[in-house]
Length: 117
Image (cartoon, rainbow, N blue to C red; front, side, top):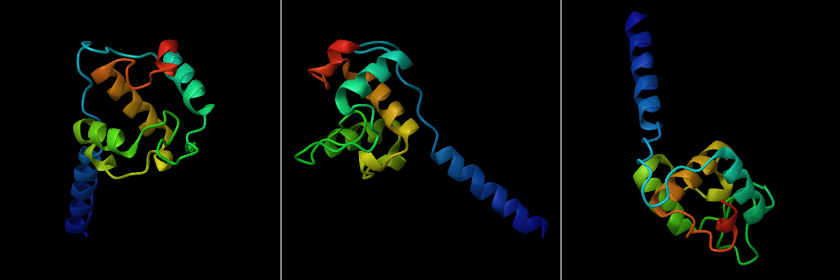
């Protein structure tokens, strides 16, 4: 019984470690974005809907990520999200991905709505 419990605890520790967000970089190109700014961006991009999909189906989720931008950002910050449909990701994951992309590139990924940041 002790061995099975130990194996279970080890498996949970490995899973948890694999799902931790990498620390965002020091402010550089984009810096850090506030929760209030993310809310304004989310409202502008998708009306606040985490399940939003653009008319052509290319842009998805609250921050209207293309799959390629989502995957590129996830590779650096949250590898377990590579290949996940942005519109199907959990709200906190979408928020973290938008913050990570902002830290990398500033407002430029959102040409119209980025002005609200």
